Length: 218
Image: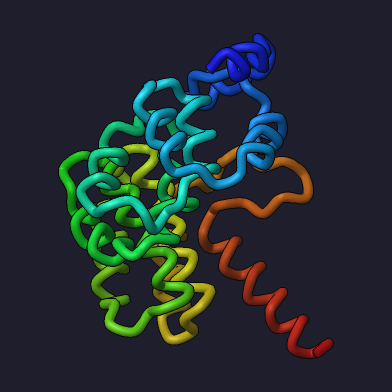
């Protein structure tokens, strides 16, 4: 904890706070600490228990994802209120452990939109990699009915799901684009030059174009 405190940078904190995060540690330096420590599940548990966001991010880098229980991960997710901790927990730990599908189903319809966003993030993973058994038309129905008015983090993951369906599943592409065009969610999202907009109709079109171009070259 003393080492993390020594890495605190007021400028980094100011940038992070604009995005809803409450720590001031440069993530490259944090990863260097994690690389030195290597995997240490006991330390990860202790770091998480501090409640400090930088310590929790470090915990997620040094933990062993498969050693967490289902209920333990559920409690961690519900206590992870800052965006970066929430994102790393889902992507670095839950997705790599044995409880991902069980938690996806448990979180998907949770009344807490932050928890529900984790369920949608895990659903996006399945849409792209293991779609068998998913009700893709049903997901599109839910997105069409609820994405426009969803809170920010939940809306972001629903939009990711919409785009993933359109990119990876040609039979639903036309409908996915039409939903995006009608709802216009993230149409005006500020996107740096050279980066791909999260506006689903444009995102889908560009990713499909790139895939077709790669096929022609390959």
